[in-house]
Length: 404
Image (cartoon, rainbow, N blue to C red; front, side):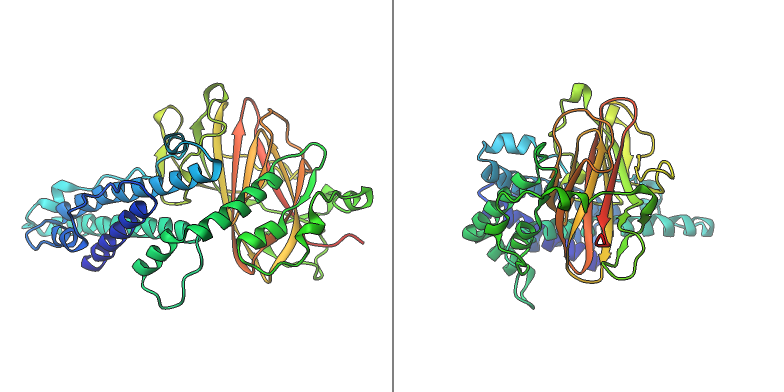
């Protein structure tokens, strides 16, 4: 337990420093050092409930500092006021499950209560472990926007370097804006190659001339090569490209989904809800109507004749998110097919690759195509889908076999 609380204090201090480096006031008291925080949490006279309450309080501070950092980045990226950016970044603080305070504070004299007490302690340990894991994820999200740190560098030093490297942030921001422009739906150009912009942001080798791609539009034959025959599609999450697979298009049929988040009269179609900031599959958040929502496992398409997925318990005027991870045996630039009912955004490894128009619409398997860079190993996919009314759904296909 003491190790977890010690890690926790260090992470709180890092986020406080990072927020200050971004020009935002830290939510931690300026005169409270990490050593003093650790002393509070690890005081031998403190009960396990005291330590848990302190950890929860500082988790709230970490999430707030993270929100400030993200808001500062968003304000710079979109050239908007900080307060406006802050309002568009939702808190990532999860709703925590209550602990059994009574049994934790009780002096155990009855042997029959030992098991209950042990379970209560184990729950606190698990909750604190989840807090540390969430804070580490938030830190990773921030660091991934910066220059990769040298191996063996202390975390605090890495964060100081990343937070203070304004020129690198500005260059990355420019590349990301360029990528976002190409990710947007274009009625005159359904198929767009964004792979090289993704490689530039991710510092991967460029495989084509970026100038040659500027304004490039696929001809009729190239568009025909992207045609999807629903009788010849397959389903998987492990991608082997151009190597003996009979299917030309592979559709992803395994996701985690969360929702509904409120969208009355479509007023929140551009509001960022917590999953858009950080994916924490163990977290729950206030959703539509104040109901608590959490991630649910979803596997299998709606019907055998179409690869559309629908979240559990879909409701009108709501926002949903779907998350999955794909494994690639090697780096690859591949075409993906996106279809949604209604408005949707798609991110690959936190980079926007598809931003659909604001109109309500029906699902089409070939609504839009984007050529995307997938790195070797694990790739994270986040899908945001709006439901206006009646049915809703989404699909993601990957062209794994070149047409003959």
